[in-house]
Length: 269
Image 1 (cartoon, helix red, strand yellow):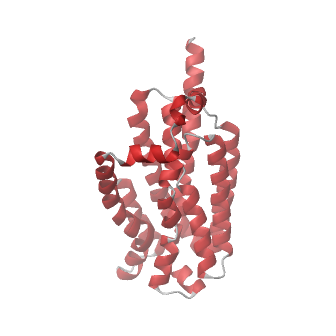
Image 2 (cartoon, one colour):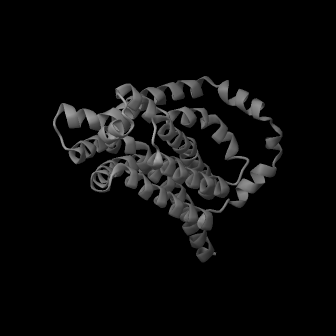
Image 3 (cartoon, helix red, strand yellow):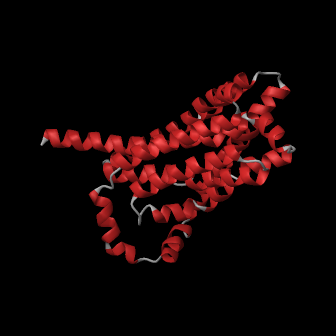
């Protein structure tokens, strides 16, 4: 009995850990353009507004998919979702690396943003299925911490790799990382039996629109969303986009120094 419990807990940590690792890796791809600022402007002959369009093309599908993702993770195998999204992230990195125009690069970023929308919520869904309810708060915090660590740890290495190999080659390396991760996700992620029971339960007689009405009718959800949005907005603008360039050109730091300094924003998270 004790052996079975230990094995079950070990599998739970493995399943959640791989999903959280995808979230960690996703943040590395998310912050990459911020440390490639000058290279991207030169490659696509774009102004600051063009660079802003490029970086924020990530957020268009990322924001739009948040509610649909919440509905999908209750209805579709998370193993299939995360595996396919990791492959899609790799495809987005390849398209971004091959891009010869702003619009093609923006398409790559949009694919990365679309797939990134699944990372955090899927990790939490697996945590609720595989662990006792009392551990949800801890695992939610750990998942968020891993994402921020991915951003903090990713900025400086990506800046160095981009300088040494070129920004296109850097994106190809990231695509390889996500393809490798997809293999591990497919091999080791398993939907807990409790998730299958939920899918078959009568609660799912609720239509998608009815589910949305229930969620969106809660005042606390709107207040929490507004609070989180106000916190995250400056992080997205400074930490993921313009911060490295500001420190590099405004304070005469090297690309590596600027990326390392900006990484502390995410450590604070």
